Length: 255
Ligand SMILES: [Mg+2]
Ligand SMILES: [Zn+2]
Image (cartoon, rainbow, N blue to C red; front, top):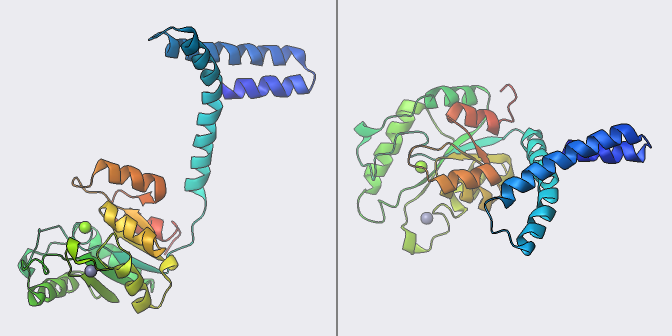
């Protein structure tokens, strides 16, 4: 529809009335069809008809503009991350709520592989994890350390572990979606937060990244809320698995 309208205007400007007329008729027909679809369900009051006529002319170019802007946005080259931070539960390992047993640590598929490749490429990696089970007395600090040690046993060493052991009401500055874990991890790895990408499975991960000035990549699980996926699609990036997420973090170039 928009192409027809634009062609009609362009041909008219070039003083070529015949193609301008054809393009104009195409535009008018498609616009009329669109308007009809929107008018038929009613209410067919004069105000409604006028509103539908005007908006039916405006919506196609606005929609096309949004689409093109989105296409440009997702294609623009992104700088490769200089460090990658990972959420722990349901990102690197399957979530066992308030896990205090190292034997229950199970890496998600592909985690070991992407971490091996990142280390081989010299990209620093870190973990940023909320563990409010400690504040709630469900996990002892020693158990948390044992579980994290098991993670490293299975997935290799991380350049930094930043763990928030506080609960929601504690008012700390590190519990995601607060930025503290991300800024501390960046400091520990010797990079700026802006050069970090945080990969996580829920909205709080993406919000923490944003709050710290880092970028976020969401790898949803069946437990990730639809609204969080929508928000990440709009403001960050969404990947199907860890390997794709790391690829996006590295700007899709060979690493
Ligand atoms: Mg998680
Ligand atoms: Zn905290």
